[in-house]
Amino acid sequence: MFFDRDAFRQNALLITFLAGIIVFVLWNIPQLDFLLYPFRLFVTFVHEAGHSLMAAFTGGRVIEFTVHSNGTGIATTQGGNRFLILPAGYLGAAFFGAALFYLVNTIPFPRKLSLAVGTLMIVVALFLRASGIALLIGTLSGLALVLLGLNGSIRLNMLVLNMLATLTGLNAVLDLIYLVQNSHATLGPLRNDAAAFAQLTPGIPPFIWALIWAILAAFMLGSAVWYSVIRPLRQGESEPV
Image (cartoon, rainbow, N blue to C red; front, side, top):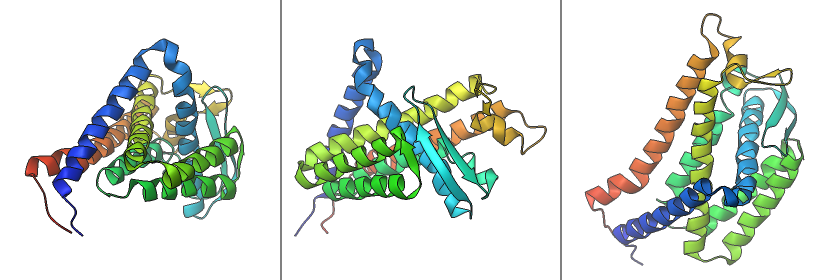
C-alpha cells in the first residue's frame, strides 16, 4: 500500500484553509455568536483540565474543576507544584490546540484521532472530578468526537478537528493577550492565573508573566502550523510508506 504524502499535505492544506474561513466568519458575525458559545465552554474546559492534570502529575490532588455558563471556570486543587499548575491552564489550552492541529495535519488517520481525543475528554471529565457544566462538556464533546470518528468521513473528521484545534489555540492566545492588558483582573475573591503566579515570584508583575505565556502560546501555534503544513509543502515531500 502506498501513501502519497504530498497529496495528503495538499488535502490537509485545503481543509485547514476551509476551517480557517469558517472560524473567521463565525468570529466576525455577531449574529453567529451562539455557534461559538459551545466552543468557548470547550476551551474553558481544556483550560481547567490543564490545571487539574498538572496538579495530578506533580503529586497534588484535584478536588474539583468546573465551568460556568459565562465562559469562566475554576479548578480547585491541593498540593502539587504551583509553579507548574498555574501556567498549565493557558499554556495547556495552547498546547492542546497546537498538538491537535499538528497531529490532524500529519497523521493520515483523522477518524482514529477523533476517537482518541473523544475518549481522552471523557476520561478527564470522569476521573479528574469535573462537575456541573464541565462534566457535561467533557462527556458530551467526548461522545460527539467518538461518534464522529466511528461514523464521519475522513474529510469531515479533519474539518472538525482543525476547527477545534484552531479555536482552542487562538482562544488561548487571545485570552492571554487580554490578560496582559488586564493582569490585575479578578473573579470575585479569586486572582487570575498571572496574578496568582506573581505572588510566587516577588518583584515580577503579573503582566510580565502573562506576556511570557502569550509568547509561548503563540510560538506553539506557529510551530504547529509551520511543521505540519507549510514546511512539508515547501519541501515538496512525496514518499511512499
